[in-house]
Length: 442
Image (cartoon, rainbow, N blue to C red; front, top):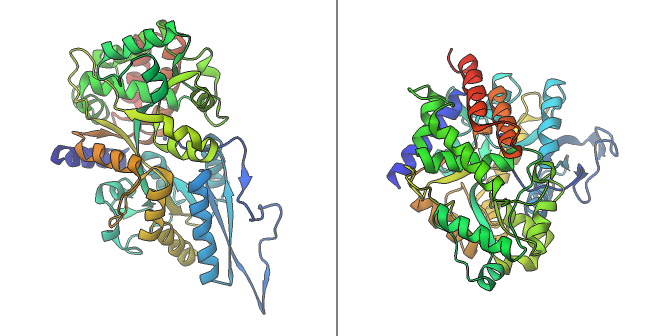
């Protein structure tokens, strides 16, 4: 655990010097019972005055959305003169919509992010309110909070942390006498067995690129340990063209060559849910994703939960990485726009969104480990996740939420190209390092 804490701190601080996926559905939708921006005027009568209207954007459906809206209702009961206009926007559409609203000077009062480099870019542009001293720091896991601190100022409050694992169908594994793979060879055996029985081994929805990036990050970690990314990012003697990054790309193409994934995976969008449907229907046996998948299951197919379990990414022959190392992500992280007309109310609301009460409901109902101290875990899935996090030797945050945006986009583009075999691992690594030199070597 001590090394885990050290690694988390190092990665967080690196992210500060410099997005992951989340649960979502197909189209931007207003929250149930809440008017959209087009359906309601900016202000409404409230007795002799007018209501104070704050816009609240988030991206997650299901139980997560229900918890957010319950918090909205409680806040409005507490403040009868306030209206919170809640709008849910799917994960990938959300990223673009928020960026456009920020650049256009019309952002929501309260918005969600993943912290790290993604939030830092908005903070550096002056779009995010500095909330230092406006909340109780003792309520938060310090390592998670560090992922929202830039130049000693706090720009967001994290509610939860997600962990990335292979999720698998227990019934399919039992039917073909398979056990969760701990090594590459065991994973290959599982893939071959499933293929022989006309089961898609691994579901992948990689149109939006970040789902495939999980593989590059995990292979890099298992081959070169957590030091590989830290050295390349911190420019400590190795770069993104290191032979171990090339080898990580080669392992991705080994999976492609053995037809481990569903046909056309690079054209399948995550938000639309086709990849998840392959799991629900029993057509596919495994899916590498964060525990946002549990929230998806509880929203889309609750009966499937009894069939699913998870296991860590397998070890690689001769690899230096500890098999307990985990990919993690802070989300949701709540922030306030610097242009909010009612910043004090907005800050009060994000404090409510990260209260112990809200965090307890989050842990009980969504399958997430929270970043809030004082929460008790009774959900068996969350307890298992928390135990694995506690035992982890080290963690890595998603590259696209850590490295600068231009380099992050290239990382996703080149990784998708590796999957599509339109680029060799060597070519991808060279492009990444060439771009890193222009951005990081300054």
